[in-house]
Image (cartoon, rainbow over all chains, first blue to last red; front, side):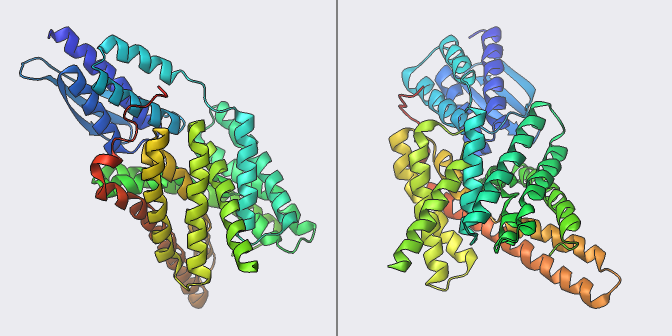
Length: 255
Length: 166
């Protein structure tokens, strides 16, 4: 094994790892998968992770060549599809003894797969939030208003995210837009208007980072787990700010 | 009869909520039916425990999350998805979002009533209440769903092995 080959493996594993961490996969799985690819290629991999960067060392088994690098973790949108596909790729590399070139080209294909249609997601999220309103005891009118409010709010979020606006501002604005739309329920005198107003912003709650953070903590990756929780907590504060703006405008009280 | 209908509709709406909130995070299409089944069972179980069993929200969430986690071990192998791909979306309808933002509201109201000694401490109490509930529920959701991973280490960590979808 030449030094160049070890560096090439390190560069690929760095890319693999940054894609997985950036797409919101919990840390222990990322580390396990990277080590598995390393084993398949005959090297040992050690990884240190933090919120924005990761460090990895790739060492030749029974040899002296090694390479260390620090990689930035880009902020990809959360993707469970990458989680499933890239995990499967690590197993395929391990079981079928794939070469580095094969793994790399398969990785590029999997990473380039298009995501879900944004219009379909918009519809699904609105439906989900309306069902949520029902779970909290809202009637059919409250559900309809929540559906519409979520649709407008989530559309705002998709649009602003595409324009690359800072994500705290995106959350404040979308929470405000969704809740001000839902506050029409108060004006229309619907019985369960309060429920419609309270559930209209719940589509923004960062449930995946919250659960991921706690999974990391139970797995022993406590530092990155806490970072993820704090990140999600900041977003919840933003949701509360957006919603409180509406409540102050229409009700003059928060609780 | 009314009770059965209530339980079924709770499961149905929870399944819809899970699929919808899950779709933001781009899960593979083949996982959707199993996400729906897991979310419906888990949420309906929590509903039964809380309404008929008188169990508190924290313990009920732990039980529901354990059911969802165990289910994802069996379904994961079928669709070659890691457990988290199935159980995180299924847990989303149970994430205590309202408690979480009410914690922030109580804090804001505490600033608002800071000069009045009685009102200020009332809001502070409310903040601790909401914060404690939301953190405990969230913690129990994650722990409940991860326990099956600890019990079945080998099986739980090789869900995607031999996938025909890559």
